[in-house]
Amino acid sequence: MKLQDELPVDSKLATVWRAGAGLGGIFLIVFGCLGLADHPGFLATHGDRVAGLSTNGTLSILSIVVGAILVVGAVIGGNFASNLNMVVGVLFVLSGFYGLTVLGRPDANILNFRMSNVLFAFVFGTVVTTFGMYGRVSSHLPHDNPFWRGRIERETPLPSGPKTFVKVLNPNPGPTQPVGH
Image (cartoon, rainbow, N blue to C red; front, top):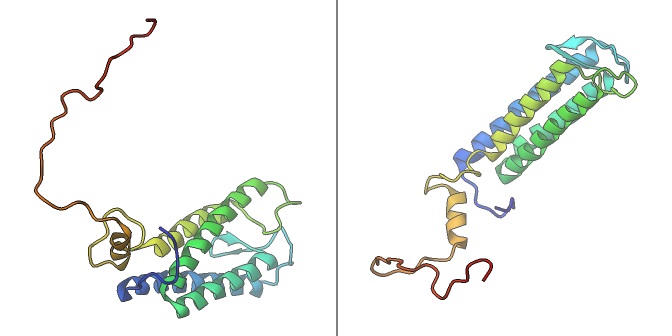
């Protein structure tokens, strides 16, 4: 399924997408502001902990920017909020992998990641992605779902008529050639 803005939007789904973007964005903004309040160095690898996560100036500013983008997505709503949640969620999961690669390397750990940050990135990324995919990605969408209706409109109709029973007597007609003959 393509993620396009011309897909139909349902108010119940838009509420979930907005809530995911808004709550995630507010959390990131609060985390970033609390991180900056401690006056850490911009690229310090020894910053204090905020809400159980280590931070520095770079991570705090990055958190505020991403949080603001999520809040703007919540305000815009609709398919934009859904797509934004999915993109930001995937980026957070990728940042978790970044954190894993730089653990124990202070020269490369410019965001001051610790294991708690890595776990948070994986969990937060998965939750935000799930909010974005809610009501869009499933094999069992209800029939009043606009994305289910969109899929059905693109499918070719099955032939109509009475149901028939077909018995297959010989699925491979014709002479068979044994191996080696």
